[in-house]
Amino acid sequence: MTVSAPFSALRILKEGLTGNTGWTRHWRDPAPKAAYDAIVIGGGGHGLATAYYLAKNHGLTNVAVLEKGHLGSGNIGRNTTIVRANYFLPGNSEFYSHSLKLWEGMEADLNYNVMHSQRGLINLFHSDGQRDAFVRRGNAMINQGDDAILLDRDGVRAILPYLDFDNTRFPIFGGLLHPRGGTARHDAVAWGYARGADRRGVDLIQNCEVTGIDIADGRVTGVQTTRGAIAAPKVAIVVAGRSSQVAAMAGLRLPIESHVLQAFVTEGLKPVINHVISFGMGHFYISQSDKGGLVFGGDIDFYPSYASRGNLPMIEHVMEAGMTLMPMIGRARVLRSWGGIMDMSPDGSPIIDKSPIDGLFLNCGWNYGGFKAVPASGYCLAHLMATGQPHPVAAGFRLDRFATGRGIIDEEGTGSQHNLH
Ligand SMILES: Cc1cc2nc3c(=O)[nH]c(=O)nc-3n(C[C@H](O)[C@H](O)[C@H](O)COP(=O)(O)OP(=O)(O)OC[C@H]3O[C@@H](n4cnc5c(N)ncnc54)[C@H](O)[C@@H]3O)c2cc1C
Image (cartoon, rainbow, N blue to C red; front, side, top):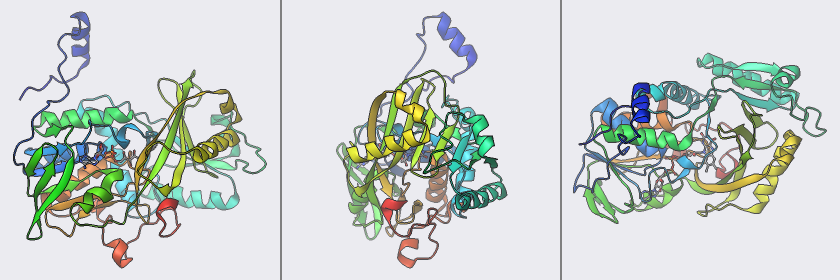
């Protein structure tokens, strides 16, 4: 197997001085083998991270990732790149805390620059009641070992002077600062995990759509694909917005609805927003990319759909929220908008679990927060596939909680409504 030499400052210098002729492909382009020890369906962030940790942590390298398009063509390359560990409820709290620690070691671990930037995340509050809720959240974050600082109105104004503090309807009372929160370059995360998995011997097979799941005597035996049948005793479905469709190939009906979420980017501007800001009275969040574009988004389109183009009413809603929060944004020109298909679960929390079919594993229900989960999700699914036991920080993400009602992790407190999480 040919693998490229590790990246280093010395190597960049050498390549720069010798015409950049020594760089090699990040990963191979192998033909699928007839059989593997494990198959991961889906070459997004979660699938690639799963393959990486199967190889790195558990020595399982006879593994294939099957991707119907190209690696990183799904939501991993479409999100607004926010990384945080500011969850309130047990179940989520320890999982996202673990994930943030993996983010903090990711670049050294993968030998890859994912541009992880801990620029701080500020969640704004606009009433006394919301302040109380954020105080509780901040205390939970600190108890979990993460960081949280409560800012009053002047504290926020000192950092974000351009916000509309005296908006008649949504005046800003203060904010909860999460200094370790921030952003990362989304597709670089996919590329980094892909390269890391490939270097350990994992086959990354693109343009290979799974069209059927083979089952015999209650056990998975492999998959049917557009590039032929591939056998494996372990198969993981890690396909985000397509989870229900792929699980249906195994005769499973998942408690997942697919909804479109849109995002927007403006023309490049000089540095103006140095944090991630989240508006507490509408679903609106914004940061500035290293290229200068303001990257922002809002809520899902509210009805189930597999169309990733998005609709105009939500665009209008997001623009209104942006103008309410920071009127100066009206001067910026929107360059592009796009959508991604979100796997919404009934309680807004994910599923990392075995399925009722032996050897078939599920990883889904990431709603619109699955980017920050990528490292821990892959880490924990790999643990489950290799050992047969859930990793302790993901033990709450059970499939049967939706059948029994026990162990529901409803962070938003909105009840069993996929579109409200
Ligand atoms: C607009 C937007 C903004 C977001 N903002 C954030 C954010 O700021 N922070 C955050 O934490 N999260 C965010 N998210 C959510 C996050 O991007 C997703 O939860 C996460 O990327 C989903 O996991 P994934 O990366 O594995 O998905 P994907 O990248 O979608 O990977 C799934 C892959 O499966 C493949 N696939 C599907 N069916 C098959 C098949 N039959 N055979 C083979 N392959 C198949 C797809 O082609 C795809 O590549 C956002 C999402 C969107 C759309």
